[in-house]
Picture 1 (cartoon, rainbow, N blue to C red):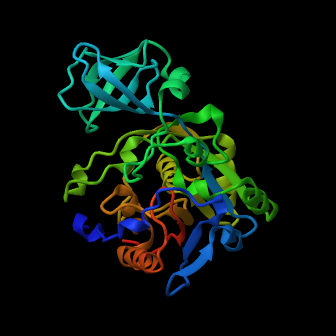
Picture 2 (cartoon, rainbow, N blue to C red; picture 1 turned 60 degrees about the vertical axis):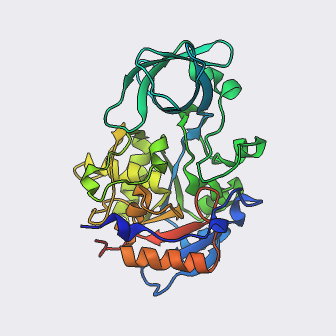
Length: 352
């Protein structure tokens, strides 16, 4: 069984990207395919060279909302921060809430001049999460009252540029529930997507609404004790059919981002043979020993130490290969994390 300490690495602070590259495709791309003894260095716009006609490139079309809200306790005036996680069928929300003093059930939080949130219950299986309601549709007021929830390692406040750049160009306005970007998708511009499609690669959209749990480190050596935050996912019948046909005809399924990986592999666990359309909540924790059924390769950014995302990459390519790639990236001064550079990895048959 893997130990948490085996997935730690030292990263110079100056390699944590604080802002995006000038243009989306200006990012660098570290490539580590099955036949390569060592990683290869490329530019992200060269990704097309590693895709073949008949492959499927799977993109997460979720849209990031201004999900961070600042308010105060209605009775005491104490400052409170709310980070939305996911909406429930009845219109209430699961959210991460932080304040200096303990939060009380049924207490209220004032946001802006006239919006009120009420704490309904604590969510026991998601650390720091609460079930809350709002006096109005919070999504209708999000642009006015909320902020784009940049990750905590970006040490600045969000600005107007982030409203565009912390969003993929293929984000679907009807899928506006993510509170963090599927960051591997940030490297694509429409011109690159058009060229990939012209090459005969299928562009397939799936949805996973990224929650704040994506940034949470694993805090226990017993990985079975780690609680994954639930995230809504869906895959349409059309997308499932294209991916199944690609697999049957010998093409590759290349997922863009760990979120797309988790959608595909979650759906696969609910299908007997061919991939089926579906939706629901996923808590899938992909770690070494996981058997990949759908994904043949994936594009991803560089991830924080001791996180579930790093474990997912290790499950796909092996821990030693992962650490070799990361050390190479550090030596060559790649930019890390959400606004950083990208990798292209093949899923290895021997991953343990």
